[in-house]
Structure formats: C-alpha cells, structure tokens
Length: 254
Image (tube, rainbow, N blue to C red; front, side):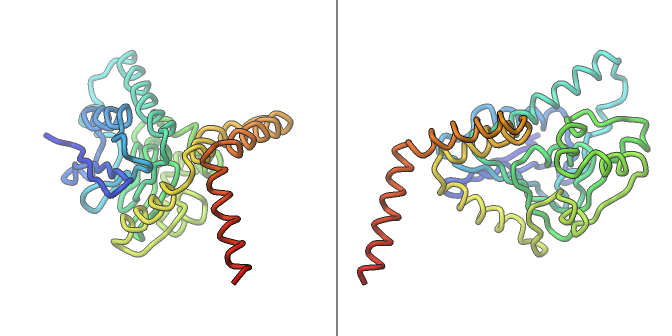
C-alpha cells in the first residue's frame, strides 16, 4: 500500500503522508518512503512541503509495530528514525511542514525536523510517551528542547500536557498559525518565496546558521564572516545586487 505521494507545484515538491485511516501514524514503511524521497528529491525542487492526508498530521509511532522488539531491535529502530529525520533536517532545500490535528509523539518529532512549520487551528501537540512507559526515540529530546526549551518538553512528557494550536504558536512549535484549511496554501506561498532566494543563501541558512547559533561567540562570528564573504562573492549575489541598484537608480531618475 502506498503510504506517501509526491505532488509538484512549480519549484516546490509536496510530499504527503497517506495513512489517514490511522491518523497518519508512522510505520516503518512510511518512514523508509520518506527517507527514500529525501535521499533523492526531485531535481527541480527548490523547496519541499511535508503534508498529510485527512485531518491529522501524524499521531506518532504506529504502536502496532512496537510490540515484540528486543532491546537491541528497539535501539536499531530509534537509530533508523534518527537517520530518516536527519535527512529532512539536512535537506539541501528548505522543508516546510503543514500541521493539523494530531501532531503527537513521533509526529511532533517529524515536524520538528522541518525548517518551517505552518499550523492550522485544529493542530494539537503532545508527547504521551511517559504515560505509555516509553521515551522519545526519534530525536525529540534533541530537537524539541532547541525549539521550546527542555523545561517545556519535560512538562509535556511528565504530565501528558497537550498544547493547542495557539499555545503551540506562542511557545514556538509553529512559525505561522493560519485559518482552517489554509495550511497547505500558506506553505506553498512561503515555499515560493523561499525558492526565489539565492541557493547559496538558503544553504547558509539551513547548514551554517544552526552551527553558528550553537558555537561559542568568537567561533560563531568567524563562521558568519566566512559565510557572508562566500555568499556575497557568488555570481548570483552580484547579479541580484546589480539588478537592485539599477532598479533603484531608475526609480530615482523618474
């Protein structure tokens, strides 16, 4: 059964999770399909939107596959999740996630791997692993504290706290909160803007910025200077600067 589908919208590729009957719970086949897509994204794509069929982004790990694993198998399974979500976070082009309904457990870990997140009013966020005797295994203990702080992640895991769409927006789980049914169109609009950027600038934001943010200040400043020099000296940047200056000069002349 197909668990993912790819749609094309100009320079944006939309990867859809297609397990609506299971609230898009993530089984191994779906995760491996996502990995396959990000291992070889469409060559024309300058932005990727990660969406889901039905009313939910993802209710998390498909627990039907969880039972019966040995400790060693469970470790390997967690490492597989890390590998797949690293593919998303390290995508050569920006990834935008459209969040609605359940964004729970592994679904929240998946969302956190995207670079931008657009939420609809139905979105709600939870980490129910504590109530199930589990612990996050898809990178959530690394990515989510970077988004909202370890103290908030601890609250969600210890108490089962659920954040609605407005609360999620307030604490940083989403970047944009739009009306019901408007998530995909907003993500496509943003993807169009992102795709129009200079590729080297997008590369710098995706790959250099996270390292700079986590570096010691002196190292961060040095890396910033190097990246700024590389970006500014590109043919693309020079052409864009010339076009801007020529346009401004023409406006002044009028």
